Length: 239
Length: 328
Image (tube, rainbow over all chains, first blue to last red; front, top):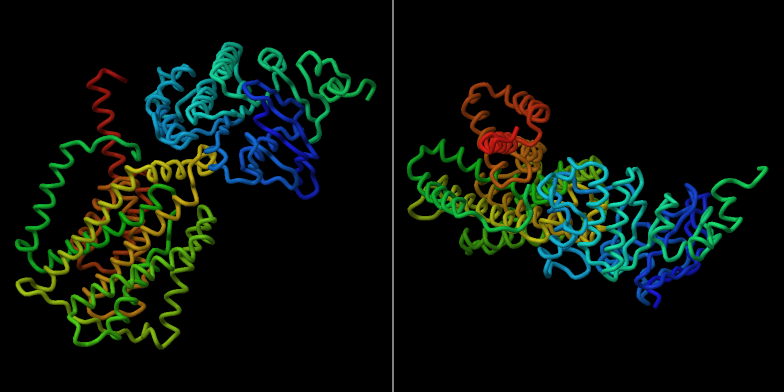
């Protein structure tokens, strides 16, 4: 079953077309990765899905409902949560309170928010730091806090924007475990990630975009053997 | 700042009851000068609490809250002149207060959309400009009598002197402002506003209706400030543009809040009490030094204690608890 449909999505920034006529659909309860070189338009795509940016053209359908241009808090309330590329915690709040906020204002509202907060903290292995202010966390813990907040919002679709960027191997493994747990709980994950090893390991499907256009779509082994993808990442031979 | 639910400790309720009982008895024990000082602490401390319903939570610092203060005073004062002379002053005050609330509500809603889309210094300047525009209107158009000023009817209640009466009215407003602030802080709206103050975009992404919550805080703050203006106008008995549309009122609200501790209930009240006693008692004979002292305190607080006296107290408490628990 399709949970998210992107139809002819375009975003223009003055002279630059960050996303051009992009279309794809995401299957429910899958992990779909969006990959592409820097500047390909991945974060712009996430910004449009989460309501932070309005598309210049095209449609975004979530669970069959039009969400194009809706305000971010409405998008979150419908069941789309986002973990940011650059962690954006509320710095003066403790880890627990950061997660509690998401549990209070997420898809299901404040119902069972305490239990939801506990669950998210446990899944993301943050119990040890629960009373620490978010500003005191290491990068690895901040990434897991991003994921914990996203889980606490009780989404049906999680947008994970480079959750492994800047992490060491151990921390990356921990994040992969968290993503797998999220997926097992029935949440669909749309992942933007630069680390190809991570993408190969967790993805059911990979979509490659370059300069705002889709250039490949399939399983990890399919897309990473396509010449267009190799060219996009490594440059055309002889160029 | 704690905008997250939890019971208010019994000790806080007990302390509040003792303070309230003392506040009720004070005007029968103090000299008229001392009661006037207490009046100012209640009025401006209470208004600083109202100011921080927006500024304390969200970091939207209004430098023009005197706009609503002056609006309240002028609305009630001008209306009193139009009402049937046979009405009692108490009724005129009540009608004037309702009218001022309505007007502040409309004004706040009207400017909310343009100004609340601004952030940081742009919001501060927009509010300052709004206050200046209202002040200029009252001075420019004769109907407002802003330059020459106009009298308000004298409110008298048998058994109480004028200073005692207004002390109790200011106390009532003070308690109202604190009750609204505590309710706001402990509600979902307060939780949302706290998050807006730390990162507005992230707050929206986590499902917080940022625009709606800012509007609620702004309107509440404006309305309570306007009521302060009404009572202040009646307490003066004669108002003009210069007496109510005063930029120093706006700045003092910020100063009291910063000095005491932004985002706390007690902070603005402690800040107001300290500054008012300091400027009016300690430096009572050195009027020229008031503004200089105010500026010096503001600079010192920004550098030495950005979270105010309550912040210092909390730090000392945390250190003491840490030492007791053997933490470094």
